[in-house]
Length: 604
Image (cartoon, rainbow, N blue to C red; front, side, top):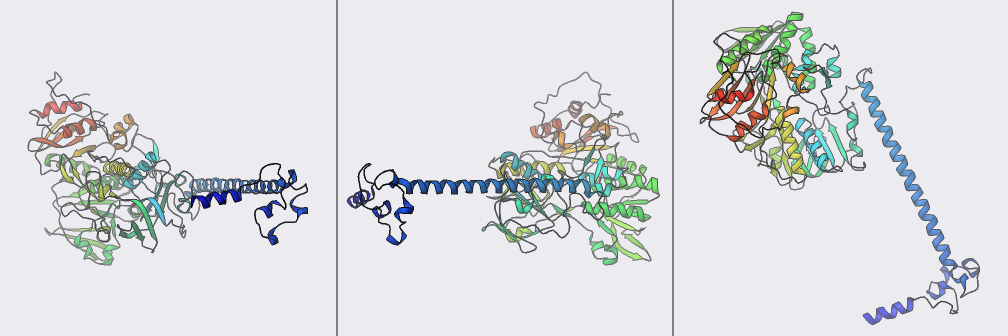
């Protein structure tokens, strides 16, 4: 074979320079006669001299001309694409500015009705769910992989936004258009939007596969209804199929309803709000201006926050606000009884008619009013009901995906790296994870959504980091009373509370003025004290208030086997890193009064 190849090479080798040859170059290369050009066209020189190479000149010239034309066209196309991209971004920016005031325009952060973007058939990173965890993951993925292409598929019609202001600051806004602008003043006076980013931050869905340097796109108003983990594909509720390389499930949860209300029929359902989304806030805000009485069922975080928010409106507009729940007092499942009772009185002072020890038996319509019958025989008449009785994690995808759901806590069971499969992660309310200090848990708070989403995004880009974070949560009963908590805060556990008299600085409003943030976990979400030293101090011992006194500020320790597993900071702010360190150390403490001094509660 080698000899044949050598012979072929000799046959194809051009003749030595200066040697005369019969025929043209085309003839020497055995080109068929009907494809050969005439001598007059192919060359104007004498055969065998410079003229014999004219065909090369012609070929090179035509090639150069063609290459130049091609490059020119590519540059023009690139210029046009760039101009088109700038035009779209400018248009979206203009749309953002005019959406709040334009008649008939879609609200800011909401997809325009009737738009059907072309959905990519494949994406490297697919995030199912459009809440806080998904947004945190998208931002984390892009931070580690600046060219990543991330698609968020959200059942919510709005772009990703933060939920806490829906039951807190938005209700205290003096802006009559707050339901449209969704902008609010934080307790520190600074204004911000409920949305994490404006629409111009996101890439159009149809441009995601081709846009330079990748980006984050949001497909709103769509639900993933089936997941094929072997084929790495999902199917949407409109039949669209999308394949992925890596996937995050951040489906969150749905508000629970009471069985008594579910059995009541459509007439009752029409006057019911299950509070969770922007549209729920808008609807309830409108209803609160139209009816005479609203009853909130539930005494936990959400129920108590909404009660205080609507109680403010009760004082100014004559709205009757009733709150009922089965516990002995507000936050009865979280706070020790004495502090729960104090909180109940605080809510009453806000203008709310609080009915503890109330279990709903039936709900019906009588005339133009709703009648709530309690198991103890009491009746409550009202115009509208808000059910704030907990959250059910959205795990419908578990069946088609073959993913495990925890039987005790609910949610998708994941490992220490938040993985459910080798290329599937879960974060936020829907994740049931193993806490190395406190055991298996599922957490339904903003801070957990932020941190778990961020970690999932890091691990989706190869970080392989375990979830060790002790997430915090907070609740504000208006601008003057609030608390932050971490770990297991369960009123069934033994507790030790250490309190002191509060000052004007010991309020949520003052805390945010000092820190400069409104969402408090943004400033201290993963911080941890490097060292905690507990020793005898000459500082005065904090005094526990006597019965009937105000619990101005203090620390409540929750114990399990004499070890602190949870901490509530009552009107004490910006001390969460110390609390996180105490729980992480997992040590027994002989005198929790000394531990309380670490939080400087005795300072004026």
